[in-house]
Image (cartoon, rainbow, N blue to C red; front, side, top):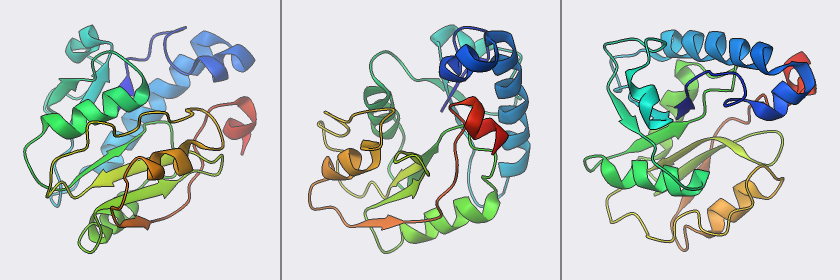
Length: 183
């Protein structure tokens, strides 16, 4: 899931500290490098893009399929992505995590072999990856009541899964602030 890298529309918390143009430039380079790194014949990369008009952006490689995230909270948008794709395992990642590489994604998909869901925790209490096996219907209340951008985001998201079995994979750092960027 990613946003078109427009100043003032992407990485705004980071932008308040380093400048909106600089934050958008960082995100543009970060997301481009991430897409190059994650190409692999074991999975299909698909871009869930916001805003809707960003689906036509020349920023993204033309050969990658694009779907709109739609409106609502981050949880609404992720739930929509999970419900809109054909049955089978799906992992959603954020594009603001410089450390993601193919082995991280492979471990997440492998974890879905034995579990219903997988999370890649972030150091700040959120997560950089969420995956669902999707052998049964995706719950309508998925991600409702999650306190996004807080240390509770992962715990809240896990709670919306009810009795689903959950695996955790690698903990990585996402970039939300200038301190994250320096680290």
